[in-house]
Image 1 (spheres, rainbow, N blue to C red):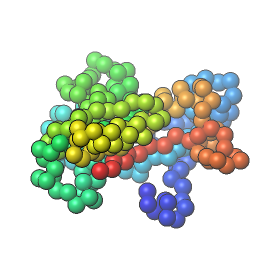
Image 2: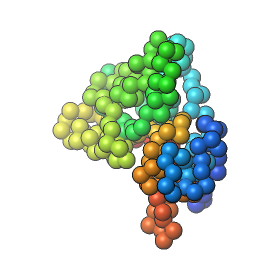
Image 3: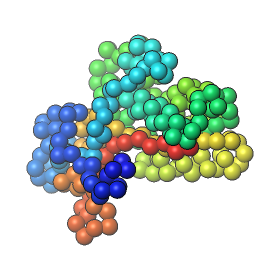
Length: 224
């Protein structure tokens, strides 16, 4: 992320291995066609979304198999945030620390729902959006409020706003706040494209004369 900012690079990738983009992409982009994606590319994380050290987070293999990758990445980044702040887990455990995470669109849950007869044992815990924040709180053993915020595009911003309010009111002594979003299926892109929200080429060019819709991306960020 810092390398992109420092060197003025773009995180855009012309294709993805998350799903068969060619099966859904149509060169007309917006047009009058529904349920297509305008581009095969996007702003994707280089890290595989399903790579996860479950044992480190005291999660069994059976439970890890049911986890939405957003939960996995959110836990990893929350840990890294505390690590970067110089705060060991022993110092955080038992404190009145809050956790507010923003999230929008549940690609993984929607994909599993297509074959509900094969849902794993821990399915409901693995795909519930509220668990994104709750898992972080449980692993860290923090005792402040824990909530996943869903206000569409502003989810992460609202999560940080609520965290600030929690600190100012004295409800919490410290807070983790941020958001996570992943694109693991073409569904959300198709639905947004139906409404004409997306750039036909898949890029985001805010405040530019060539701006024409936005390009979808993914990522996770947590601040302390």
